Image (tube, rainbow, N blue to C red; front, top):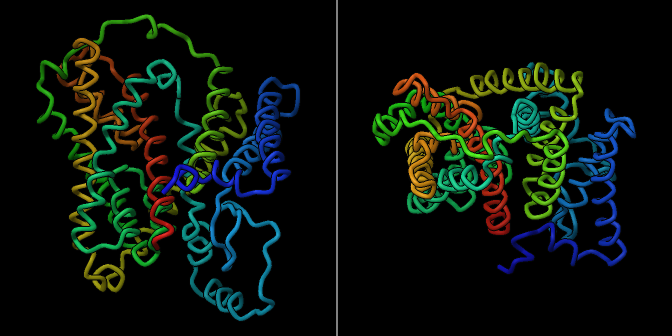
Length: 413
């Protein structure tokens, strides 16, 4: 696989006609400009910021894919000119089901297409402060990369246990500790295991909240968990809203360009964070108090509804999924803590290795676990800002790894 196949957004620029490629680049920059003008209040931010993000993301996030048996440029966000074959058989069957099964509309229109995952990511974006990422980019990203150990090593283990590449990649993403990411990946790579994989992922996410503190205590001695971090120059730095907005739109565009299959997740997270930083209280309240809570509620309810005996016990691979899910989440935490020790060595022991568990991208829970573990050892230790930086980077690295898995494995499915 060459680089243009791996980084599909860039590769698609070479597949398009020259005028279209130039037009895409122009529209990407225009989207960035609209976001900036909206932030500066030169133009109406309520329209320009979402519009600018959407314009930049969709023109960056095109990929070469087979759609309706035609190989060409496509995207996985919207098909404004989509056509049907003129028959009403399938739509009428779906309409009948949606009229009878009371949760079917929510499942069909939000759950089975990944929309609910994107709504959760918008909510996560709006509650996430990216200041620690900009203050400590190297250490935060390094820990997050180590925390992907579970996502990386679980894949070959799943292959050895007889799973297909698509199913193996889907179950490996349980190691991200990011439920929407698992949902999104399994929808694309292996719909047949979508329901059991998603259920196992969310069951283990609840369990890991109790398991991770024990793992931190086992791997990090009390004297290291109690370690305070001596203040450095960047600790007192104030990250401006301007810098955060620039980071959001540039990071969103670049990541959509590199990994267009994960563009909906990148767009959702960074747009949510931009709304937080652009001081738009009505949108912030909408995403945080309506979208995030509504999506989380229906996500939990639907996962419970899907836990019927026929669905779970009828598939002999469910037991394997339970084993692999535990392995993935365990290795992710171990990898993150190892990353904490690596940063501890790089910083000449001026670091708390317990921060490593925060690299697992269950934001903000893993960051709170790190802080709580340190606080138990020393009441005066405050490491939450460092842990939040690792946790936010964990969201980004998880989406990147998801994009890589889907890009590489999708042609095999």
